[in-house]
Image (cartoon, rainbow over all chains, first blue to last red; front, side, top):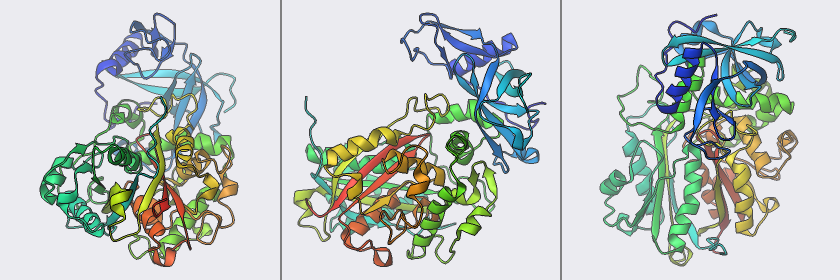
Length: 142
Length: 394
């Protein structure tokens, strides 16, 4: 699967750009990681929501996740996705805690369910942006 | 330090709204000025009596409103930045300004070309007026790349969890849509007047993005509305029976600029605001004669009903059954048709309707002998607000 060709690639700024740049460079999902208390935060913040530290790095996460929520879109206001309906978008809860939005890769519309185990993989689109795919983890029933 | 009590100090004395249209020759500024002048005149006042302006959270600024209306001496202005929660939140802000003497007569207004200018339409007139919010960065960087372009798609990210986790039947959302449409039949200004809706038709409505069907979404309209508040002392000398502010609050989910990383994504700002507002007001949820609930989407209204305490989380389906939220039921809701069927005026139309009800001027939709009612707001990814209003000076 590929991010739709015509879809606009965002040009993030500030910490969002740092987050994406780390992820693009690693070729895998990275998350803001507090150097003081170890809290993982997404989207990234200038102060840790747990301990208020401003010292952090963007570290690679496991990529293990579960379906926290999702939506099946039967219509869209986004022209790049018009030919792709119905498409599934997943809110994936990472093993490390934060949740991200990801496109479902290889799901059937009626076979997605809260709690399913996922793998998150990234698709680099620019130096400043990677697209996220949610795939069913091995052993998770489709 | 004990809280300064704002309850019972200020009242809504003037209300006005434009028609709810799909396509208009009027600019946003013209509609806002028309509603504002209407509310000032309805209050029996002149623009020169106004000394505070709370403008909408976008499109039009307080200074151009003052300049066009001819308000010579603005002593106080503040802009609540919380989308659809702004209008109801401003009732408390205005009451605080009046109770402390910072202002005497406060004008609040909202309006937009919600139909003509939000999405490109062939017949749309050029429009430079913009609404901007901090969460647009979140949308741009994390939601829009996935085909989630506007409110139904963002909110479905958490509403589907609500629907699935609590097995919310579609008929519960349908009950909101049907009640609003039923009430719109009684409102000469409702966009969906003369278009009644049955539960069967609701259930046959196609999905936009699950759990939201087309008929779970409010109607895009061009419109504006305004209200004027002053002290209860001054209100006694004005033409209409005052509609007194008894309690109100705003609340914001943590974190407010993002939707999916909250501890519980179903927590609304209203969960925090509602208990504060009832405590301030000295009345309870069971005393309410009507509910004007911010209904951008039916499922959001269900969550608000739960946040207000009328049902446990996930349990609003029981509350909305059997006509309980329709005129003639125990808690008639959105007696003007709401955002769902009157039109989307950022909830200022809910405030106008609440005031009309408490003046006993609601015509065919009048809740007989009503004395107390509430209004809620919801916006910008979950900000919440509430105001509890009463008939007359209490």
